[in-house]
Image (tube, rainbow, N blue to C red; front, side):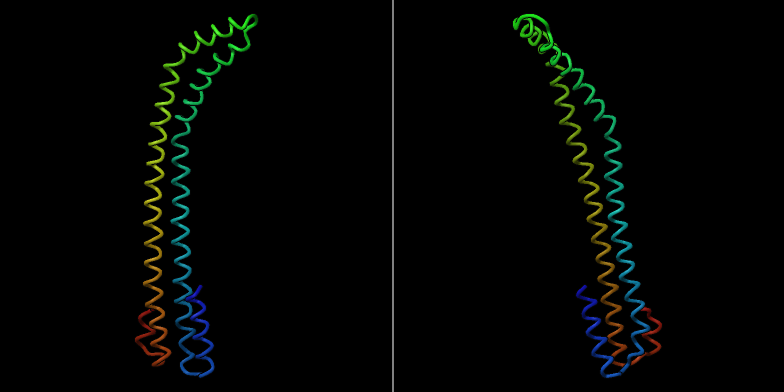
Length: 170
């Protein structure tokens, strides 16, 4: 945005002097193309990141469903203890028995959940690193191209439209 404001100020200044205004129709489309390409590159980085995140979520759907099913298998019988008819003693004995039966399964569920949490965090970390590199490269290319094109425009405004500036494309 600040680059565009500087460019507009330059155009206003140059139009008042009337000198070398033929440079603008040549160089403004180049600057516009650079801005457009940056938006395309940045959007691709963002889209790739979103796609990667969706892929990760999809890849962990089955393990997530399996752990949820295991949790219901563990907790369901414990919750049924409260439904027992009769004395509190029967309910407590149910908790004792079912709790002991399900404790090993619950421990395994916890360990599996912890392992999957570490794996998915690492997968997301990897796609974030790739996305950050992509954003950085898009910005680097944009900055270099924009600087070169702006320099060519400034040269043209100073010396007029020459074969050299028309041929460089930047």
